[in-house]
Image (tube, rainbow, N blue to C red):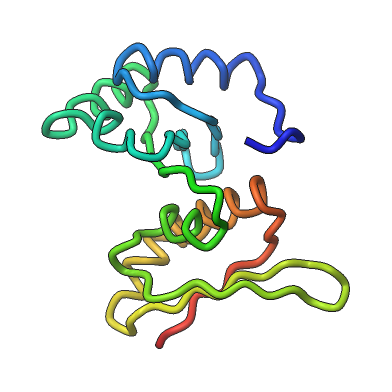
Length: 147
């Protein structure tokens, strides 16, 4: 986790609860009130443990918190991290670029038929990817385009 990220008491409490219920280690927790959800960043290789058998761990966490819980597997590589935040099975490629003023942009290339699933209802998935990319890699804009 980047040094500039500071966790509040509520986020630390949710991370502790998540770890106690699922057994998976949470690296970070983002409370997204605008979408009424909590996003946990889990260590690489712990996604199965975080979800649990038949999704039971994540259901138990959702019931305890009272909000939708979403999981993203962490990666040091910004391309892979953005891919994980969306859906690795549906993303064909992620390209990073930088404008002259220094702002970073990610372009996500998807199959035309899968664009709706990547963006999500009301832009939910795209917003999650943008929020996390900005938090971890200072990527302010994500463009989702068709191949």
